[in-house]
Length: 66
Image (tube, rainbow, N blue to C red):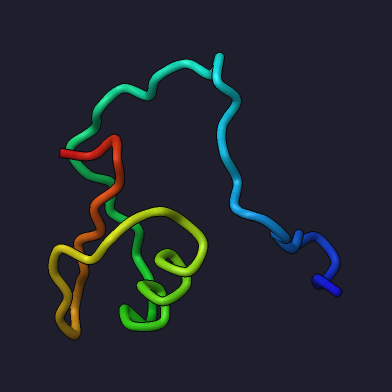
């Protein structure tokens, strides 16, 4: 069971067919204390891939990022 305030995803989320197309953005920076753990968290939950990673930062590619 998920912790209070958190939800558990049981199947891959697919947006509704009539959902608006997202605008393309260049990047979003999110400060984290552990880059490797953050990359694991994002890649396990979202359809994205790692373009770059080192000990200080990572770049993840999403469908609506340049």
